[in-house]
Image (cartoon, rainbow, N blue to C red; front, side, top):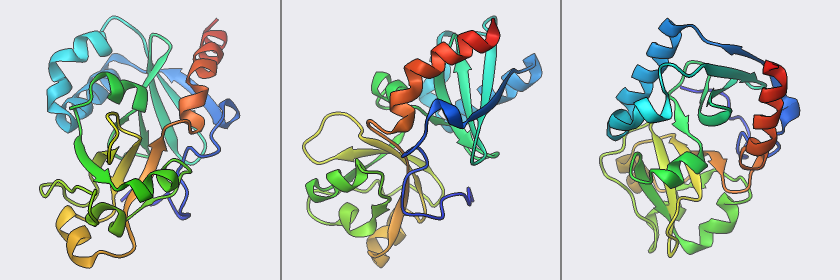
Length: 200
């Protein structure tokens, strides 16, 4: 369990560059371990990892508040995780490679809540317009799509399996980790500038 989302609001709702507490260039052995973890979590990305995470390019892990880590290569944040939890892509990366994650879809009525940082409630996934991938288990990173929209609007982490979401149909089904126009989305450019400054 990630065990860090006590509120009903996304981790990145108020995220800014001031939340960065430090950064370090990881050793080759750590870089290999991170690459392998990402390849295991997202098998379809494996053929692209040499381009996304070149072995000869320094990999920076940026440590932030709330036990958040950002994986940065060539000054671009690509993945994040909480403590030792699974790596999740940033939305910008997911929009480049939209099929790397399992997908859930929320109905139209849930869109404004997801985009304000609220966690995803079961009824928003089970009502007409919502779609569940029946293979998704508890504690799985998922792309959150929206009825009538082409691109993912959030990245979530399931609190229960798709089967249980459908059966129980109440409470929070998915923690909203990162959503369009949240703090991480907005800070990516300024973060890159900050990292360049730190590395000089």
